[in-house]
Length: 420
Ligand SMILES: Cc1cc2nc3c(=O)[nH]c(=O)nc-3n(C[C@H](O)[C@H](O)[C@H](O)COP(=O)(O)OP(=O)(O)OC[C@H]3O[C@@H](n4cnc5c(N)ncnc54)[C@H](O)[C@@H]3O)c2cc1C
Image (tube, rainbow, N blue to C red; front, side, top):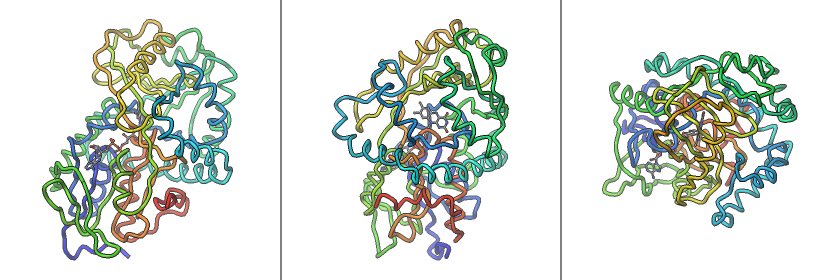
């Protein structure tokens, strides 16, 4: 049954990152009256500084045995792709335990594979449609993407994922070091293998993607409101209004798309979203000697080098931390050192640096769909490393569910009620 529009107070979307803004656009196109609510400016949180890659090749969940096996080695390497903020360990332990259980369970890994297959198929269609509908063409490039490897053994470790991609019809070319250097001139001789995705798409400015969507949303009659959600009013299984610091906003339905902070809101609504911040960093550099036009990811080191509108963005690494810990800027310095190893002559003076919080659930599947035990609350959070990729797909799925359609069975593993 579709949600009632009888009061016509419309839908309140909490959070104007890429996920909330794309969802607001989808709901608006479905004929809904929509208010997009954020405590800050649209697109200023995690969606501001990502690597810009629309990663529809990401078909294997990060919660899997091979990730778990690499954890000790990654933690021992101080320049490696994973670190844990030491003071945060007690706070992180329950999440880590859940992650380990999900990664070891074949049944959970299969749920991840099935749901990512369905989500990525939707993402492909959804981005093309949104680029058209919102006039985003100048912000996206389809120049391909290149993953590069410094050892044959690391390349071999990716075989499981490539087999899955091939089965799903993803087009890619396995290349040797010389061919990789032709695709991305300037690459170091240390690169021995690569995987080239010729259809890979990236944005040259993730922040402008959000602000342009927000502008189009407002131009088409949507309301953008500044305010921090502090509570909800309920009548039985329905939320009737959202409480802000100094006002109460009535709504027919609510979408929770508040990124890492979504867990604080779901607790107020009586259900659990065990999100942690997988912090990541970026450094923007003057684009000196950049002779490639596609994102390049050194796979063993876990980061991206993306040519963008405002310079060269070096982005990535994972730092697990409890909320509100100060940034560890040494992680950003490591990214620049990695860049120099991979592209010795590329990149000039540093222009800016940034930290962001990937909103990550322990099974590395997002929460998409109706909230447990509530008839008019919808969830759109937990998009971890692929929030840009999955934002428009999420928006379309939520809009369809609000119209009364069932979500595809393959997305049952993304049910927001799975954590109780
Ligand atoms: C270094 C790095 C590189 C990445 N690279 C990629 C990539 O190449 N491709 C990709 O697909 N993904 C990438 N990601 C992941 C992607 O950036 C995130 O998954 C995505 O930005 C999450 O979007 P979001 O809208 O859920 O959250 P956010 O962008 O964090 O937005 C949440 C919004 O909710 C608001 N909010 C929170 N609490 C409240 C409240 N109580 N009341 C009102 N508003 C509230 C916040 O102010 C914020 O604006 C990367 C992430 C990082 C850190």
